[in-house]
Length: 631
Image (cartoon, rainbow, N blue to C red; front, side):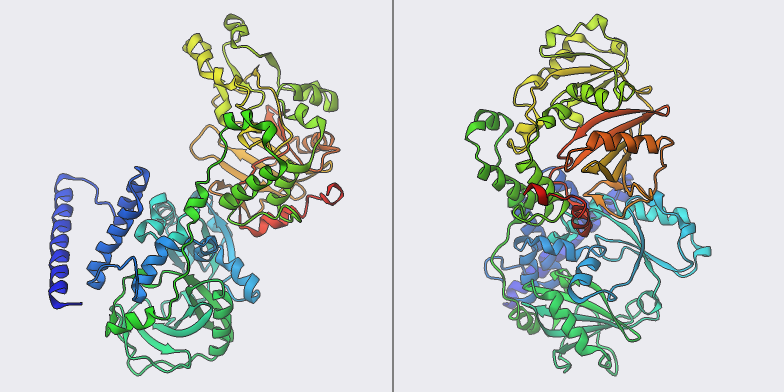
C-alpha cells in the first residue's frame, strides 16, 4: 500500500477518534447513556437499517482503525480480509453449534469422543434460577454467546450472589450477542445460556499459562500459536505444523522470552483439531493440556475478530493464502423463503400435492431446525412430528383439534368435570348476544392456534361491542386456520367458528398449563408453562416418572429450573392415558384451577418446526415415538 494512502487512512482514523471522544464527552455532560458499539449495531438491526452495505461500511471503519487498510470485499487476500469476508458470506449453520461455547461440547463428544471438554454442572436461562447452595465451593459460571463472559469462583463463601446475578442479567441481554460486536455470523441465531462448569485450576486459574490454538485450513492444521500468561502479561508464539517457530507476532502481544516448550500431547492435539475442523474452510481449535488429558476450550471461526495486526505485515498475506474461500452460503436468505399465504393455500388446496407438502416441510424444517429433516426414515422428534403431519390420517383428529367438538370427546372419554364450560359457539359474529354474555369470559377460534386467536375478557363493561366483534371477525375467514397456515400438511382441516368459554381463575393470576406428551396411550414427558400473564414466561420439560426437569428447551424460551408437581398429578396422568389411547402421538393440555383439572386442548402436531436445544434431545425424544407400524 502506498505511503500516501496509509497517511490518508491514518488521518481519517485520527479525526474519527476525535469525533467519537467529543461525542462521548458531550453525552457525559448532558447525562446521556454511553452505549457500546455492539448496542448501537443492535439498535440498527431493530430499526431494519443493518443492511449488507451498512455492515461492510462498519467493518471497513474497524479495519481502518486497527489494520490501517480497508477490506477488499471482491478479492480478499489477507488473513484478516478473509476472516471478515466469511463473517458476511459464509453462513454454515453448523458454525452456530460450534461457536456456542455450551453447545460445542456436544459436537466435540460426537467427533472425538467424550472426556475432552470441561464437564458442565448445570445450566439456566435466567440468573434468578441459579441455586448457589447446590453448587460446589469452586466452579466457573459462563455465558455461551460471547467471549470474556466468565466468572471464576474459587471460594463460594466469598461471592456476592446479587452482584453475580446482576452481571449475568446484563450478559444475556440481546445486544450482548457477539454478532453485534462485529457481525460474527455464527452467533446470530444463538440463544443465551448461563452454565456452570467444574472448576479446573489449570484452565481457569490465573496461574494457568498455556493455551494451544490450532489453525486449520480445509481440515488440515498448518500452524498454531501458544498463548501464555493470559490474565497478566499475555504473549503469543507462532509455530508451523512441525513446531518450528515462525518469525512474526500477532496483535499487540509480544513473544514469550525464552520461547515455549512443545506440549506432551501435541500430535494428539493435531489429530483432534483436524477431525473437529474437517467440515470447515477455516477454524481455530483451542486446547488445554490438563495433566495427561487434552481438553478442547473452544472453536473460533473469526480469530482475532479479523482485526489483529501481523508484524511484519506480509504474514497477514501469507496466512491469507492458506484460506481457500468457499462458495457463498446464504442461510439468512433460506430463512426468508417464500411460502404460500393462508389465502393462497386455501385457493390452491386441491392443487397442492403430497410432494409439494413434503418439500415445504423440508424447506421450512431446515430454516428453523438448522438441519435438513429426513422424512423417509425419520429419527428425531421433529422429523417424526412432520412425518405424522404428512402421513397420519384419523377421522378423530378433526374432532379432537376442534376446540368445541373436543369437549364432547373429552366428556365421553373421561367425564364432564374436565370440560371447560362454554356459553356458545358461533358461525356468524352477529349471532353473539352481547347482553347474555357474562362480565368475564374467554373467546377463541375453534380452528385457531397460539395467542393471536384467543382473547381474555376480564370486564365486558370496558369493551365496545362493535369494536370487539370487528376485531375477531377475521377469525371466521375459512383460510384463517392452523391447517392453511401450514400449507395443508396436517389432518386438522376444521371449519373456523367462534367459541366463548368460562374464564378460569380471576384472569390476573397466571394458571399453570400442563402439556402432557403421549405416545400410544402412555405419557412420556410434559411441558409446564408458568407465568403466562407476565413478561417472564418460563417453560420446563419434565420427566413424568421422576418429575425432574429435563435439560433441554425449545429455542429462545426461558427454561425453568424447577416446577411444582400438581397435587392431582395421578388423576392428570390417568386422564391423559385415556384421551391419548389409540393415537401414535398427541399432546393433551390441562389447566389446574383450585385443584380441579380441565382439558384445554388436544394437539397432534405441537410446535411444528420448533428447534430443540441441545439438538441431541431432539433425537432422544424421537426414540419415544414409534411410527414403524404406520410406515
